[in-house]
Image (cartoon, rainbow, N blue to C red; front, side):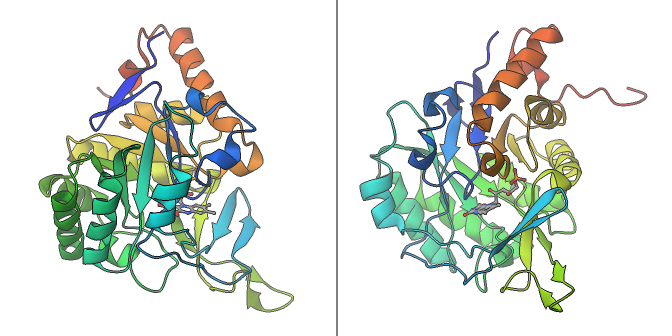
Length: 304
Ligand SMILES: Cc1cc2nc3c(=O)[nH]c(=O)nc-3n(C[C@H](O)[C@H](O)[C@H](O)COP(=O)(O)O)c2cc1C
């Protein structure tokens, strides 16, 4: 079975990556699985300076989901390049995620990562729903998104992925903006903006009040968004949202994703991403596909 895929110019040994913010900087998970079994790692979003993130409570469980408002806590790009990247085993492709509050700062982080050697691609987080400035404000305005992609495109020649928000009216329109401005791929989706309430205390569960919902609860929404975006653009898509098993991942591939990312599931089972890769391979073999890549977009639509 041929499991390798090419995603946005990046050669992956299989289509399974780990999602930003749910897999630390990668090394934290090395005791639980051989990182070389993964297609790659998308590291925690880094900014120009270190960030402390939001105060607790910043994570809460919901039915079939997880609500978080971590607030982009990270070590900053300098420590990331100096300490975190070299600690990863050779042969594990690293896509570095970038978050900032201003366009020029996004571009500066891209520049610094481009010189870092180990990084095979950059994912721009234009979709964090629970920080005061930055992130989603770029992902929800067509013009701001265009300007952001243009600036990052100029700042790096590495494969450039845009991670978009599901909290938009037309994902097709936002996807086309990214394609027109030179993005090499899309990562879909980030968390859905959400609220949950402690009725006894009559308070929001999170101190930040609003958070981002992830996990199986969002999977059908993510599939819909991947499906719509895949019909709108030619650049490849990485599907994200509630993937817990190989079969969940296959749903994204069939709907048009070329690769997938596993997020919240890592908290339940730190070895799950390797199992997802095995599950995709088993599904492809069981259904007579010679290559995992042949699953991409193979959804049979009624009347087709
Ligand atoms: C605790 C937590 C932290 C996250 N941090 C980031 C982050 O730093 N950057 C980012 O782009 N996405 C971040 N995400 C979003 C995930 O990468 C992913 O897009 C989302 O959780 C949906 O996938 P899932 O349902 O498999 O978790 C975070 C998600 C969680 C649950």
